[in-house]
Amino acid sequence: MTQSVLMCRPDHFGIEYEINPWMHVAVEVDHALAAAQWQALYQAYVDLGVSIELATPVNHLPDMVFTANAAVLWDDRAVLSNFHHAERQGEETHWRQELERLGFDVHELPRSLSFEGAGDALFLGDRLFCGYGFRTDRASHRPVARILEVEVVSLELVDPRFYHLDTCFCPLDATNVLAAPDAFAPDSLRLIRELVPNLIEVPTEVATGFACNAMPLGGNVLSSLTVSQIEGPLRAAGYTPIAFPMGEFLKAGGGVRCLSLPLGNRERGRPLDVAQPQERSNNL
Ligand code: ARG
Image (cartoon, rainbow, N blue to C red; front, side):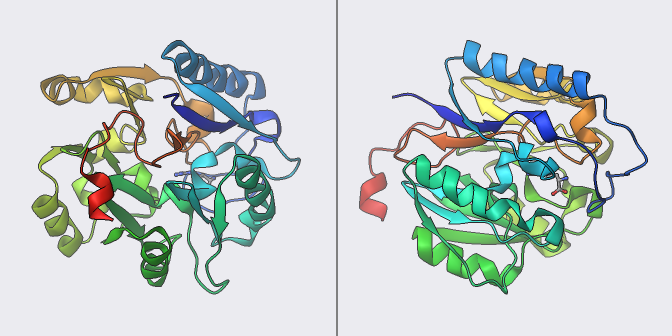
């Protein structure tokens, strides 16, 4: 079955506002370099056999390039994001159209609940780990769980540099997770240690290079340059890191994972290389 990822060309990417500590409007984006960095990731997916769906970029929605924030997906269901910041709320109607075009059954949360899609919601096996504290409200987790009919684990984020869960937590498969311990409240870190069979701890200074903002794919881990600093533990877990320079997108607080929304195999919105457990349908 074809694996696919939703991406959006950085045609209108830029820093037009500041909604996370990485963003500074005074810092220029090198548009040619951003396009080249994006293209390198796109090409790597193609070379690894992934089919790419492209969302149409929209002028003055510079963060649409970060497709991970469109929605969280499971089976053919999508829970659309309710962006926390007004600056990104204009994206919602476009994401609804894109997801409908792709055949998803698109669900919405009450407007009062902030929720930022796969940026704050990542599957480890059949469990959905959801972040809260900066962009996503904890109160959104239960309705998301109800819509997708999955179990949700809530994790509190405490470091504004790691404002989305996918900046500090990356399930590689049902066993191995990359995570930056310092990004989580003590109770949440305890929960991670309890529920994750093999936690690969990423030092804060490596995670601030967006090493955890990674995409596992066919035994590889595609990420930013700092991923090479955790090569040892990754290889021990059976993975090969592939490092991409993502400097222009880091200026907006995003990296490889933010630029990619796995569409699964259209059966499951799970990470791309997690095998389908035979008994899955019995668990529903
Ligand atoms: N500038 C974007 C924002 O602050 C970056 C989004 C990064 N996306 C992600 N999935 N972490 O919303």
